[in-house]
Image (cartoon, rainbow, N blue to C red; front, side):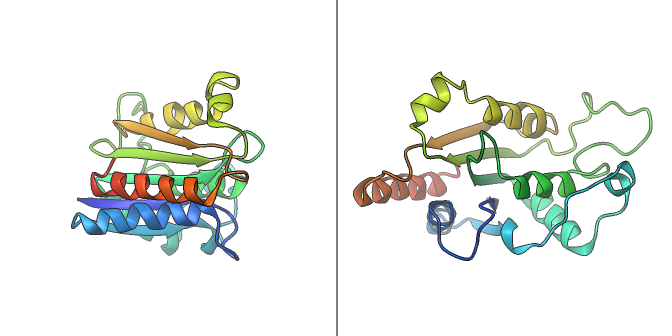
Length: 193
């Protein structure tokens, strides 16, 4: 099993729980004999796209490498903190750079993206950490941004199935609860779930 782990916390100057989640999932995958590759979005220095011309222009070598990692993967794990109700801007810019026509979407005129799923044959698992309780995000906010990401990006380009795990109350979580979460996530990595 080939696994790509996209660690989307925008701050890599200090360890965050998102980094621990990525490490735990990777360790579990390695335990099971899988070959995970981790992409640290904060280390990439990718500018946001600002025009249709940039969107359709050929990607640079860094983006091409990331596209190759995702193409090679059978399972993609995406990890990020909830910021202002959605993924951090840096991670959104990452997906805009990577999911260009010819990779995630058809580049040929007249080919309908609804009918051509360029990244089908891959599954995905999204992990979201947040300060609010997970139940509040799911029930009160209806996990709106997560559902939008899953439906309008991942499933739209062919990922299936798409699973998610929401880890809430991260700031107030005890060391024991963090340890329990990381054990659970390592187990998920063993089963590439």
